[in-house]
Structure formats: C-alpha cells, structure tokens
Image 1 (tube, rainbow, N blue to C red):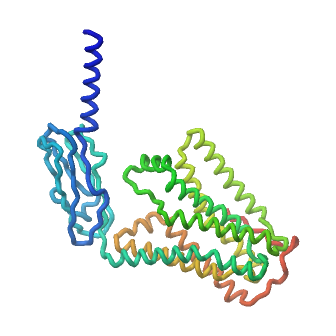
Image 2 (cartoon, one colour; image 1 turned 45 degrees about the vertical axis):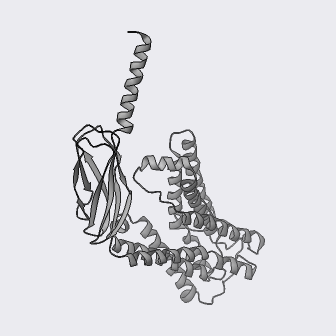
Image 3 (tube, rainbow, N blue to C red; image 1 turned 90 degrees about the vertical axis):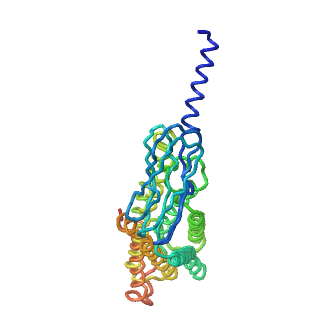
Length: 380
C-alpha cells in the first residue's frame, strides 16, 4: 500500500476515534448546583452532545435516595443526536446529595453528568445564617484593634505576651498563603479541580480579605512592640522551638513541592494544618502569663469580647446549617472546625474569669524583667 494512502488512512482513524470520544458520546447536566425547599420541585437538563447510534439506557440516581425523587429515573438514547431531556427533582428530606448517572454503553463519556443538590427546610434560615456569618466576620475582623488601642493609650506593651503574637502572625500568614494560593493562582486551582473534580473551591473572597487583614493588624501590634515600652519581654525558648519545628516542616514541604515530589496543593494543606495547630496552642502563653503576674493589665479584654462573639456566632451558623440541611455529620462527623471554635470560646471564658474574677483590678506583682519573665509552658 502506498505510504500516502497509509498516512491518510491512519489520519482518518485518529479523527474518527477522537470524534467518537470527544464529540459524539458526551453526556452533560445543567446546572451543576441546585437548591430547593423540602417538598418542592425543580428540574435540570441532561444533554447528549453529538451523534449516537446506540440504544443504551442512562440511569439517573441520587447518592442518598431518601433525600430526592427523580422523574424519570432513566432515559433511553435510542439513536438520539444532540438531544436534551428534562429531569424533575422532588425534595423528600433535607440534606446534601449528588445526582449521578450510569450508562449501559461504556463508550459514552459521563464525567460531566452530575448535579450537586441541596434540600433545605427554610429560605429564612438561609438568610439568618448569612447575616450571622457576616456579623461574626466583622467581629473577628474588629477583634485586633482593642489591643492596638490599649497599647497606644498606655504607650506600653507590657502584659501582652510575645509568644502569643509570634504564633498569631505565623498562623494568619499561613492562612493567607493558603487562601490566596487557592483563590488567585490558576495552577493550584487546576490541581484542586483535578484532585476533587466535583468539589467546589472552599476559599471565598471574604476568606482572602480576612486572612490578609489579620496579617496586617497583627503586624501593627508587633510594630508597637518595637516602639513602646516592653520591659525585658521576649519570645520564650519554648515558642522559638515550636516555631522552628513549624519552619522546618514548611521548608521540607516547599522543597518537595519545588522538585515535584509533592504538589503545591499539598504545601498549602500543610500551611492550613499548621494554622489549625497554632489556633489550639496560641492562647496558652497569654493565659499562663496572666496567671504568673496575677493580673491582666496590658491584655485587652475587648479583643476577647470580639473573639467570643465571633466564635459563638460561627458555631451558631454551623448549627443553623446543620438543621436546615440535616447535615449534622459535617459538625460531629468531622469536628475540626466546630471543635476549634468551641476551644477558642472556652479559652475566652478563661480570660473572662481571669479578668473579672481572679485578678479583677489587680496590678501586677512586679514589672516584667529578665529575672521574672515567665517562660511559656510546653504546649505541644
């Protein structure tokens, strides 16, 4: 056979196979996300793109059959070409689920045929949850400034623990790196989509704003430590050791990501895990320092009021959403976020008791100097 004819035949086969896979056997759904009230109906479209010669059946099902009723539960292709079916959805019980499809013809591409569905009790609860979310967002954002104000008013940072500040700046910096990486860097967004093809990017614009603002506000407080009276306060050896371990972990993860042993997404997750760890330990040095000094002078209780408000409302929002979507598993099945909020609120109670009960109106027994600077306890 002539070489040119062989090349033309090979080209024809490649074009035919490509068209078969990419253009003629693709099932898609629109929209990808739908929300409906309990007991109501909505619909989505199931579309066959391109030419089809099979009489395959497409079975449409929900991961949680008790949440939804689908009508029809299946369709027959029967040689349809560029055809769209309307699938009706009835909300039976509140919850979160995903609609998927199974096709009897393995050549049909179904990777884009899925719908994320939320069935909720009430639209009013959604609005209340959103309002609560914005209130705790504002409370947490404002919480940095009572300490800045009291430092400025006293022209002193004596009583503000430097270990707490060092943990805080690193924690919020890592949180900002995580949020900005997932929100602004297309390469990392692509990594996330490839790893979780049906997941939604967990980072929103308000997450980016809050974390970057937290770094800025904490940096202001640290700057005050250099210009106002601070006695002989310094970062303890314990805190330096913990920060060194965190730095070593981050450096190792960065190197492994840089040489393509790990993905940069894994590096961002390492940043988020260290941030969670810091949230668990960062209040310990300040509470211990207050105990040693038998005073809360220099430590702003306004910061704690704002933090308590934010943490309480954050947990309230999770409870409201848990009821509205019957999604208690996200709280108690994976307790990280709820547990961290609860832990922060419990520490706020410790500070309230120190400030208003144990050390109310107490002056510190002695100013901090090199001989009585309390070392932070080992907190890891």
